[in-house]
Length: 155
Image 1 (cartoon, rainbow, N blue to C red):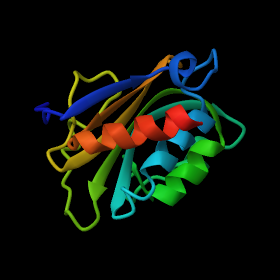
Image 2: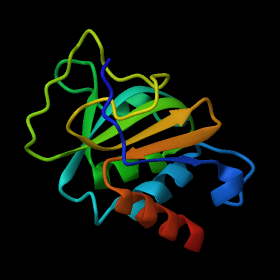
Image 3: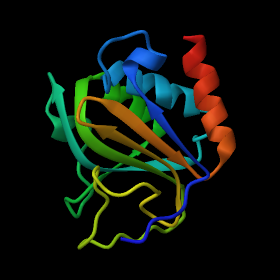
Image 4: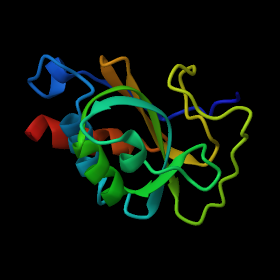
C-alpha cells in the first residue's frame, strides 16, 4: 500500500501523557479526540481493524458501513463510542474532509500494523491503537500535533 507522507507522527503512551500506567484506554482516546473536536468538525472518521475490550458490542459502538468493511462516524459519534471502550488492542481511525469522495481498495484496507504514514491520500489525521500499548497519531498539518499536545498536557 502506498502511504502518504505525514507532516508529523506523535506516539502517545498513558504513562507519558495521562498519568496512567495503562495505555489505549477509551477515555484517553476520547481526550485525544476532544482536543481535535473543533479542528475536525468538518471531517468524518473511517474506522478499520478494531479490537477492544468493552462492555458493549463493538458492532454497536462502530456500526459497519453498508459494505460491512468499515464504520463511518462524525467526531462527536466517535467520541461517544470510544468513551464506552475499556481498552483498545488495535484500530485504525482515519479522518477525511466531509464530501471528499473517498474510494477504498477493498483488497487493501487500512490495518493497524501498516508501515508509518497515512493510509489514504485524502487522510488528514490517522490514529492507530497498538496492542494496548500506545496511540500513533499521524497528521498532514503540524498544527494538529500542537493542538493535541496542548490539550492533553493541560489535563
